[in-house]
Image (cartoon, rainbow, N blue to C red; front, side, top):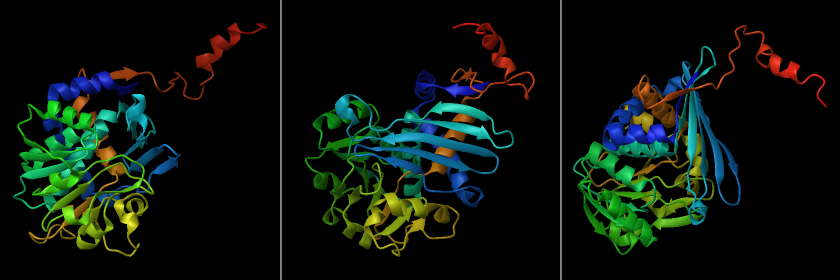
Length: 346
């Protein structure tokens, strides 16, 4: 039997434990796994691109556990009543090869993306940061806000989206979260005076969501919008002024905003900062950019955390996913009775 966390179980777990508590717990798992970066198998995700989106597989292994996530990114889906991003994932035991847990990851990916954003910002943003601009208030916005409140102490939000309905939605959801919220009239207005600017857009285009003039000295840019080849959010001039931090260079060069730069342009992988092998922010006036595209080790951490947190609770169930004959060499015995019953049937 394999533990299974479906959407109902995930909703029950998150609403019972709370988004804030889960992000705090997941942050510890993410940091622990990034600090043992060299133990993991690493490769760019396997992507199947189409005119309307992308479907990806994101695998990794630390020698004891193997994990993968299936995820899509289809920016046009909301116009059809569908989500832009959906996902599920599996955690498996390397010694046996058997899956241990199978989980929904649409909700879980939102939690893990918010978590890694805030983990990165703790070493890249100015410590006294209190105000964040949110440019793009879709599905990720509330999770990002809570993560930055919990891990950095952000209290004020400046929000902007090209869709007024998305702004309305965010204001409804954030009403009880304790933020001072300013509804801006443009992306530039939202960015004005912000210590941290989060860009989270989904259009599959070479867009310039954030222009160079919007980014003042000392700002941390949390660029997390859905990424793929030919999709950007940042004015390249920002990147030339900033210190750039990423997850896995081989993947981010293909999908991140740094695809706009010469391949030799320097970037720093976050695990080096967390391990003290490279500096994060070095001055109050430095501009830092977290060019995040999402990497398999983050999903591994999220699955590992959920597995530990829900094991033996009401927040999971068992599914008969793996055939288990009494004689492991006699798989046919499981279907033999059915096969015999069809003898002579035409």
